[in-house]
Image (cartoon, rainbow, N blue to C red; front, top):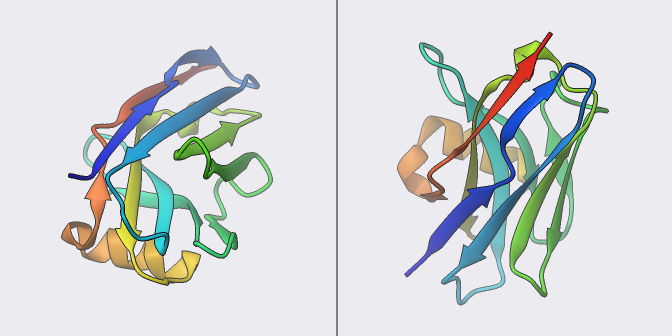
Length: 130
């Protein structure tokens, strides 16, 4: 059974940093694409960063240059290093994963339009105060 469990959220002042982690288990195939999404109440969930199984990455314009996605295959863990945080970054952050040799861009688009295509964690809240 596939499980994704996020951790690392919290409250921070603008300009600060947080690192989110996502422990992934249950995949038997190494062809897995993973990423981070976020959602604020009343708005659609948006993809912000993704990493394909070949290591290529894709970032949303809103966080490009401030956030970095990475993975530790030995630990089966996905990370999101968030620097220079802004109040607009406040949201519930979700880890997601899907099977298949997807590009990072197609993964973000597919999971946004068809959430049931892959798997989701329960989310971790990030709050950035001004």
